[in-house]
Image 1 (tube, one colour):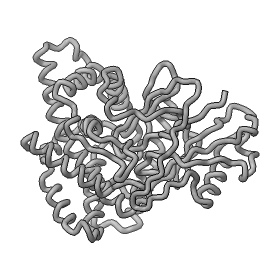
Image 2 (image 1 turned 45 degrees about the horizontal axis):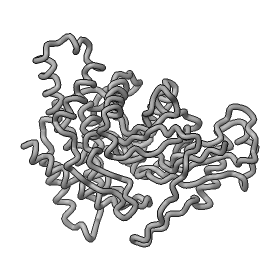
Image 3 (image 1 turned 90 degrees about the vertical axis):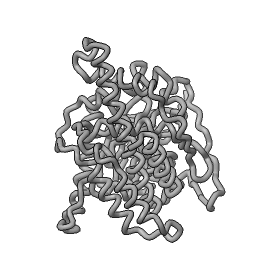
Image 4 (image 1 turned 90 degrees about the horizontal axis):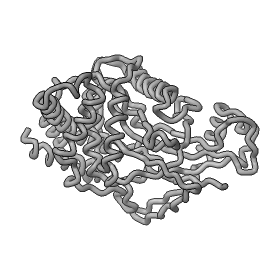
Length: 401
């Protein structure tokens, strides 16, 4: 049997999901060449990237990878990454396996924005100190990925280097935005988030990642010059001033989950992936971020490559169901509480999570403004930023905060 892989690894700027595709042959859906803004989407990377990928695979992988010729090395671009550049590296079909080495691996090359510090910037710090803070953030992410791989909560890890990593390639298809609300999937997401939040990690337990990173993004935005967005500086300050102060008191030393992806197993359909924006942080941000993702469809094949529909934000009933599942897993004795006490805990989470949904809109709006300036990935980053800012004000008005 010849196995083909779907060209669809999820790496969106916030929570996304993939489903297990259980067919014998996973058919590739050809990419559509977009003529908008003269975008060219090559199937293969440039020669320099291909050369580096070959050397990384040869160095970090074992078995047949150590003896293939560069001319036989296979690599193709994987669509969907908005922070990183993703590639599928494969052994040629004519090359027999020597041992249990993987025949396909995912190469993830970090984007420039991920080199930025994830800590609050101190104006007294030197450029060297800021550089090392950015390096620390990448070390944290690599450790997070390695631990989850060992515990079989994430893809296997094959190699780490300063520019990125080699990881398990899991055949999958993208989960549509509409599928996020499917009850079975919805419940499994709650289970995965709860399990992840309950893990102990060897990191600083202070939940300073979110607002520290937002402050750094804000500083970066204010330093950028956008001719057609000349009001952006005042607009970003306005967003900062309107962020509800109550969120600062809703502290919870939890880890950020960014993405999910399917696992090729009968025991689970979803697997945690992409931890570039992970740290001990606020549980409300994770869940609020997930709820926000109900309203964005990234499968649109024309510029700006996404569609927004804020009416798809989960209803109160859907949110309360999620909180019920979450608290059953995370709160010892929750099932023994009175109905009134259970309702109180869920109502408290409702306020907490929706306040952090505002933070999600602001965070990814600022992130996208920076990406519009520095990223070479084909995506309407500035359009996405404005969509997130608009959604921020829309939700803020609805919440009356």
